[in-house]
Length: 252
Length: 231
Image (cartoon, rainbow over all chains, first blue to last red; front, top):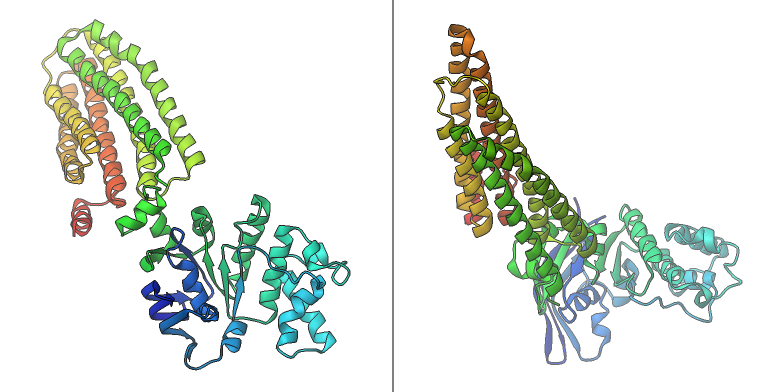
């Protein structure tokens, strides 16, 4: 099992607030890794540090290292390059409302300088197929705006948009929390298929979702990574009492 | 986010299992007394308790199934519910053993009494003590006591093994006592199986408390696992 990302002693702050404390974690390649924990535990901050989005907040600060392959993302690469290598999907689908479905998916490529029509056509089709949306939208690619799709379809379009720039890692921050159960299960099925090609890190409040889709799960509490282990171990026999209290609902 | 309702339902599941255990312990105890006293009234009581035990088994299974379906339990709660489902099935089987024993006692009542070379009361005491101890481990959440039950099983197995041989010899030497000897043999075998079910219950208690699966392991491996868990 190869390593996609090695995180060492990661600390993050918003202003004076120390939101991540000495987090070290190895994220295996071509697997889904779930991060769980109560609101404000630092799990979203953690994933935002993996693609240098955390620093877009003017008061934010990061210390420690995040190493992807041979690249220390805070030392050896620009934020733009990192965000191409590490795609992100958010809780609420965020289509560009004035753009067609086609342009939404192609937007990342265009930003990266690709303009040849045949290349764009091919990548849009491939990405929409990977996101399991192609059959539903192929006849309306340029006719319909991204915002006209249903919530579940919009989210899959956003996944296609993230995949279009051929990232190594896909970060998903609560990707299904705003979706109905059918759309949720489509996203979960998609995660299963995408694992072969991408490394997936998913933040979720839905613990059953973590149990269903991820091989490994990390539990965050008060900015610290309390426990990281095989998902099956976390959900049947966690080592740390705090993990057990959280997943069994004795927390409060 | 403490799940009060869920915790109350888990308590209810535990209480019901203890009621089930009480019924089963009483049945096995009465079957042993029925043997010792050759008492038909006690035989009837054991037979009559069976529908209540079966009903209780179904109720516990339904409650456990509901909790699995509706509450998505995890970790210690999941292990607890799984252990209760298994213990429930083992208890029901012990109830069946009690019914099997009184069937043999009724047969023995109808034929002349004989002095048999097998200490059924002692075997019965060992087997019922295993059930009692396994349930004590469940009630007190005590892994050490559960482990003690696993060690008690050897003696029960040994006694049943010896009964097989001595009663076999008796039948060869005194064919006129075949009927008595066969009934005692069946009782011995049933008590040995009571011991096996008590062992299963103890293993489920260990699984619930530590997550360790000690089924079908030899004793030394069990000891190693327990030592690891205690570290």
